Length: 398
Image 1 (cartoon, rainbow, N blue to C red):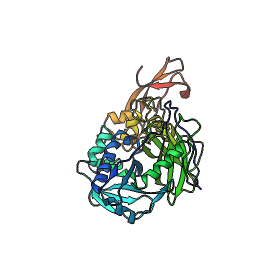
Image 2: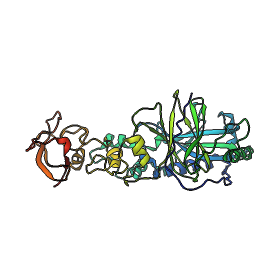
Image 3: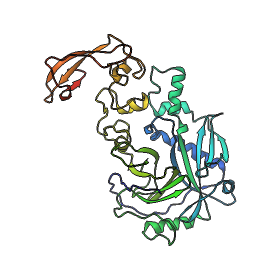
Image 4: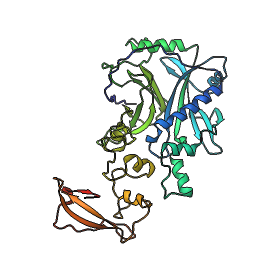
């Protein structure tokens, strides 16, 4: 049985209103292809925050109608619909792949079957350039050849899966009427419908519905198109930063539904605003707090010279660790010397001057650190007079 953790995000001040909304009607597959291209292009605004690992993130692309006599009507023969407020809708995912050539595969969200349509990805959507644009500096200078190619592949658009909800234009009035009824806390009898929270100034979950291998999460928001992260974890524990990003989307006011795959026996979900970046490091506060474990108020959580964004998403380093390979040279210093802080050892003789300060910001000692040998190892130093290293702070200059 699915469990929903109804955690709410940051306080918002705007009030909700149920304004009339009419989705765009699609007549051809080419029109849907254009929407897919726009969805991928929009990911440059927020996709860099996704961890650079080989996993897929769903990106809700919106709801659109189609006429029973249009090209898209053939979709109803190959994809099983799901029900929103008792009204059948067709949910499709678009997966970009480079297995043969760069193409888009159109698949049904829940059936897990083969693609029902394949289309060439536009050449203008260059995957490698997209990565360089999103990750700013591109691959680290010490990566070349196949290593640089792998770096781009781990951050490629292939990890993004836009998802669209298609509904027959004949059924749209019924779906909209059910949405309006739910928005006024008067849902239609016998139909699963979202419910407005008591505090209508807050982002909140309004409903959850499970499907075979999938899940619908309906989000209430008093602000139209507010950027929202959906986070998930299989069980609750003591670690705050144990949530995983499932999606980022822009819900419509007052209710919008995220649909995506979910195979766990139980799930806990968190909705949070992702438009706040207190330290200006390029990573939203909610991701630093719940996913990464970094400090949302510090540009560089490790206290060195390299910001959290570059440390994680460009160099693939632990944002809270100073010396990844234990060779005695801080990761930041190794990078500035053009070295790979993960695989390259600084070697005997590499050294730098360190300065220790006490709690009153007084210089207590200076010492020279010397890196360990070819096998790595802890830094060697002596401090006189003796101090408890835990009680002093270290700086790179007096």
